[in-house]
Length: 352
Image (cartoon, rainbow, N blue to C red):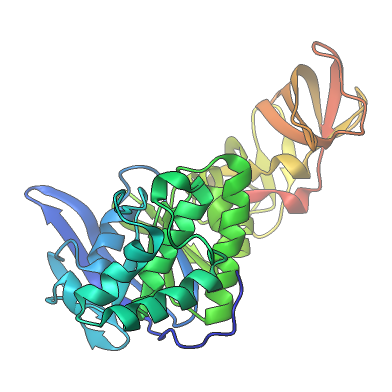
């Protein structure tokens, strides 16, 4: 899916204190961020957090109630969708079922008064780029889900937008196809140096494709940064729990920020703010050890085989913890005594 075609324009996106209100309800609350040209930035969050409304404001499908929106340096806050140099790939793909692949892709250029010959030349270029050459005469119903998704991308790219928008583009695909298509989207974005704004609620999808992730919660930005920053240094309990799997343990930071204390366990830590805190432990950073060893005693509650690894639930003084172990390790027996160990430096201390 990669290409050396550099004809697609570049343009960044800037939100300056942007809000969206529906009567008394505030869907997006004074949001500010910058999306650099030629980067893929994901708006991530649970249902109802405001991410899709934010995307639709970039597209001009929703009018901002306050603030400013700039695309490629131009203030587009008051401009309609047709006046903005953006194109969107919708969750449903929105292909015309009665039109062939070629007619679907030509529709945009022709609606912009290009001749049929010009539109077909542009369409052939984008269809070839996306591995769809030879499918021009097929109807959408004669394509696989992945092929339909690529046609939707081709229909957007043929307009050569400054910014390409994706609204939950993989939600209609099965798990294996989602992985392949997300890789293709990322390769396309990088090869063409596209500016892409991508919306999803799938954390693994966001971590895999993004240069930057903007996590939204209740209409506001909870945290933004590179994927590894958000995963390793979440700013809150919500983020630790939302970005990847995490075991959360409530306790107190004492001894001037050097000890995390619960009713049963004391753990040496460094540099934390004294007071109520939550300890976040990633499942892959925990290790099963023999009973009587490790930092926490435990009883194995359940073992699930997932092919590449085992998911193990262990009852401990810190509650039930989730661990990931390699599938080549002998699984513990349910009900058996075990120990749980980890490197204290792997623990993330979050103020409450």
